Image (cartoon, rainbow, N blue to C red; front, side):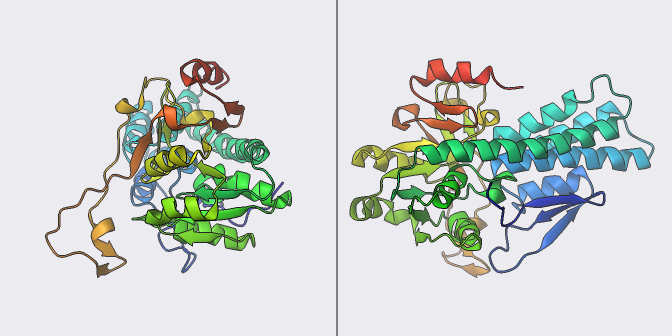
Length: 345
């Protein structure tokens, strides 16, 4: 097992504390949450981000709401269901959020003590995240050859999962297997998860990384001889179309051009059995300020129009395979994905 350099949240002494990823790598600040509203704002404002971890944090948020309601003498199933709907609306693209909250609601069936049931389910999800991320990292490391030059985008490490990571987890495991890989990380505009978070996590682990701007991907593939493109996934349709951080689609197109294998990494909970294709995936659009400003400095003229989707969708035809905790899913995805989903609890 790999020692995790940091966890994105901690629940101790009856309190939920979230590592504020908005201010990394400059400082480590913890944000305390005491209700579903606190957790909603933290997810919406990206204090915590990453599809798997926001699901677990939301599960703790539902427990906090139950505890708060109990103290107020107003704990009912209706209030918990309302809080779950509210939490789901924080980030519409990542399916793990709704999946985790549905599991929390199901845990209430036949239980008199709703507060305790929700707490136990949140703890269960936290433990499961650590277990499946170790599995997916080990499985992913198997497809990484010695000396591979790997390109990635966004952040798919412990900060995004609450465990070992997905795509970045596989790279961490490969490095610890002495495979001497080279990692190239896109900075991931406009929120700079690659520059701020991926580079920071790798530095904590003393793993070298080369940072590039998103627009350098094609030239890097050609001149640096990239062998693999490994990315995360926020939602995957039944046909294999995959939503991930904005900029992923262009990497997939470029990888196809240069004949580079392209692998998304995701737990089975990121697959949406209700979506036939990526055309049905809801794409979140975020505040224009993220593009108009760099920190507190405006970088575009006042009045400039902005299009700021947080995700894009990579069509299944550009995907070599999808790495999950249950193994590699290969094309044709319309046949392999439904079979894999039968293993979901």
